Length: 317
Image (tube, rainbow, N blue to C red; front, side):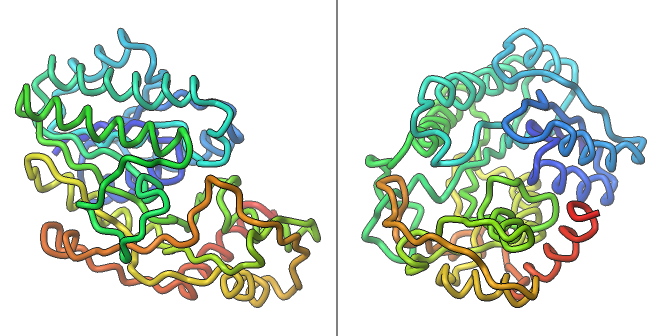
């Protein structure tokens, strides 16, 4: 199997690439190494993949239609894992043009490349944020998606819809996997597990919205990678599938867990949650179990212990 991974230098992309390479899959990566967070961290992620002879890396921007098309048409790919995007709900709030450009136009460039090259199957990284402040608990894939709370989830809804269009017109299999609060080794510094851990280590103040009376469905990176891999191996026509753990964790309890791992108390402000933040994320993973044999194994206690071990080795040293 030969797979293109966009966003291959990032948190999820590099973990997926490494897992596929260990299984003997040929992997081609594409990433622009932008400075949203440290490019050096991304290059370190990719350096770990350089030990594999079946890995090739292209440095390119998703908005560069010519290069994206060339990489795809010359690649003879069996599938594409389209993970590359501008992420982060809060960062997107005043940057709608950027998120539209990267996440929507960039996705169309990937879809067009797949159409021209005859790539039969795409797995698209979507997000639990597409559900907004839904009253449906747990979140189910057939829930209406008409009220995104920020540009980031709006751009992901657009990507899912464009995927359906290409499936309908050109018979490309398109599976949108909706990630729920992914964490683990190589986690981005703008994500809450890293931010909370880093703030406690450095005795810095951080914001815990609504005094921690919010809930997030934390999902370990290893479980997410297994879900993506299963989706790559199983073209399903057009599907939208939740990849979460299905066990929301109260944020105040999550902070307590990190305090116990680090051995220090957190310094927190507890302002009201902004309009971009839902009270809870909660994945119904029934469809993932049925279609992908998805079965998350790692509890938040186990996963954060693994993350803390990585943080001490890679960030503190």
